[in-house]
Amino acid sequence: MDLKSFLKLTRTMPVIDTRLLWASVGDVHSFAVQLSRWENAGILLKLKRGMYVLADAYRKTEPYMPYVAAQLHKPSYISLEKALEYHGLVPEAILVWTSVTTKRPALYDTPIGRFSYRHVKKELFWGYQSVSGNGWRGFMALPEKALLDYFYFFNGEVTAEFIDEMRFQNLDTVDRARMHAFASRFNKPKLIRAAEMFEAHAQEALSGEKTL
Image (cartoon, rainbow, N blue to C red; front, side):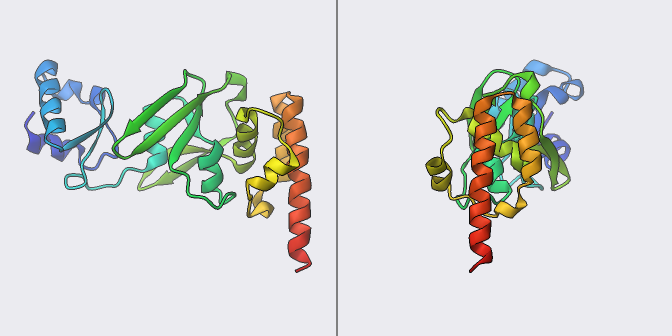
């Protein structure tokens, strides 16, 4: 396959999974050599083995990062700090796209961003929704699940001081009844205490806003 044909086939793809192209290339070995050449020429940006994005000058669509995260490591959904940023619950811009997965943990440092994956048991892989952009779909934790996933991976007890230091915002967007129901599904006393601690923090913060 020459470059013109390859670009015609792939320039609207946010992620190029070369396994999906093998049937149309004929000689897989020659195709692999071509991919290596295009990567060396800066036409292709490698995400991981067999998965690429086109460089800016060659693509017609911007990579939708939740879709990229979902494709790099399956099954997975974005959670923890990145999901908290997505839902407007923390003020900082989070640079790492952290997801949870039932597979092994993984980390991909790529030309378009860093993607981290934390392992959870299958019984904790829930509480996410479909999100879309540029016609492509990824998966994002609900705000309540993102909070609980964050507390779950925190190495220590979730205290009032810890929650204050997180500088949470837009607390009225968190469904506290859902958060308590989700905390119970974890079946871990630490998460139930964390949910109660967060609710107390939210009530105090929101009542303070109302009296201003």
